[in-house]
Structures are given as C-alpha cells and as structure tokens.
Amino acid sequence: MVVGLQRWGRQHWPGLVLCQVVALAALSLSAHYQAPAFLLALLLGMALNALSRETACSPGIEFTARQVLRIGVALLGLRITLDQVLLLGWQPLLMVALAVGTTLVLGVWLSRRMGQEDHTGWISGAAVAVCGASAAMAVAAALPSHPRKETAALRIVVGVSILSTGAMLAYPMLVTALGLQGQAAGIFLGGTIHDVAQVIGAGYALSPQAGDTATVVKLARVAMLAPVVLLVALVHRRAGSMPSQERPPVLPAFLIGFCAAVLLGSSGWLPPALVQAGRDVSQLCLVSAMAAIGMKTHLPDVLGSGWKPMLLMVVLTLFLATFCAAWLSGLA
Image 1 (cartoon, rainbow, N blue to C red):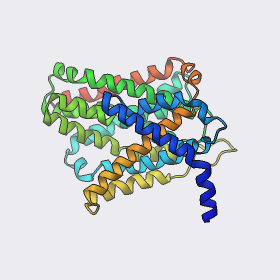
Image 2: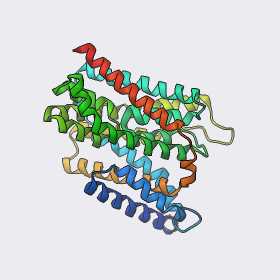
Image 3: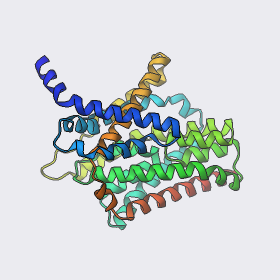
C-alpha cells in the first residue's frame, strides 16, 4: 500500500502543486484588485493550457479538476448553519425555495428550446439560482460524463462571474429605485446576486442591516445546493446514461459530505478556528479546481460556443430579479 501511495504521489504531485500555486496567485490577485477569484483562476489556468496535454502535470490536473473539486464542494457546507437559515422566518425561505426551483426548471426548459444540450441548462440554472460558480461546478460534478460538459461549465462560470459583478454594481441602485430599504433590500440582494462575495459587497454598500440580511439570505440559497444536486443526480440516474457510461450514484459522496459539514458546523461541536480553516480549505480547493478546469480547456472551444449560453444566463438572471422584486412588492 505504501508503494502504491508513493507511485500515486509521483504521478500526481506536479499537477497538484501547479494547481495550488495558480489558485494562491488567483486569491492574491482577487484580494488586491477586488476581482472574482474563480474568474482569475480560470483565466490563469487557460494561459497554462499546454501543461495539461501529455505532460508530467496531466494526472494531477485531472485529479484536481474532479476529486479536489468534490472536496471543496463538500466543505462548502461549513459556511452554513441551520440557525442562520431559520432566523430568516418562513417568508424569505419560501421565496428562496420557489425562486431556486423555478429558475432551475426555466433554465433546463429554455436550453432545450434554444437547441442547447441538457447539461448546459442544468449548470446554467444552478449557477444563477443557487450560488454562481460554486453551484455550476457542483452540478457539473454530479452530471454524467460528457465530452463537452467541462467546456460548458467553463463558459457558464465566466458568464455568471461577469453577471454577478455587474449585479453587485447595479442592484444597489435598483433597490433604491424600487423603494426597498433595510431588511427588504437585503432580501432582494441576497436572493438575486449569484456569488457570495458580490452579495456581501452590494449589501454592506447600502447599510449594515441590508448587508447582514443579504448574507443570510444568500447562505439560504447556498443551502439549496444539496437538494439541487440530489435532484440532478436522481433525474439523470432515472433517465440513464450512455450504455458505455456508469450510472451516476443516487447520493454523490460530496453531497453527503456537504450535508455532514452543515450539520457539524451547526452543532457547535467544532472549534471556530477549525470551522474557519475548513472554509479556507474549501475555497482553496474550489479555486484550484477552477484553475485545473481552465488548464484542460482550449480557448477556441470557448470562443466557438456562440451567443446562446450567455443569452440563457442573462434571461435567467433577469427572471430571478423580477421574481424576487415581485415577491417583495407583494409583501410591502
């Protein structure tokens, strides 16, 4: 067994180290320039595309893009506690559940109407409805293997990162125009902006109350990642995969890990320092996985994908904002 581990380490460590170095560079640039870490890791990884083709780094890059990604998604559950979600009350929780469900269904339906492959609809719907790039990567990991799945996921991550940054800048002005203040403004921002970092930026730009509420609502959306991934796994298991492919599991291991992390983080048994360390490891795993996906992707494949995937995400983003604004207007 020791010999096997040594052989595995020799094969994988060059790619693993490379992905971690790129991830750390992306995180450093993100902190300095206030840009999305996922997008920076993706771009840096694409610049190193040649290293993923028949080099000593290839096995480690492949392992990072698949297995390290799953570890990061599982540890993402440490960002959520059940108390945070329940403190919102039933009305915002119902809004989040309905918004996520309808956006996901609309994404799958629209992608078919636009002539896109099914995985594009599932990944796009989850990215817009749940938590941006993290959700896109988690749903892609739960979908059956497909030769164009990773390229589609990369396109969607780029698109949702751009839209999320735009929403962070535009939505504070929008909520002011709609007359939403305090908690209502926070509910709208947390219910519509795709990535957690952008939610925090937009919320606290308005007020501390809006920032606190937006963060908790956003975490409630992140908690929807578990049922969404379970739904994806069940649908594709029932539908079946190609005859040469293994059927996806009913409960992916990383989904079980995500739920366990939520329960552990909510229990209070873990020291705060350990919880924070787990969150940091999750972020590093996800960013390094995004760097690995970038390394595996050829730029011409992304540029040649056409305008339809981006249009799909724009439509879903507008639908989500309209849904939440209408819901809050009805409560006012």
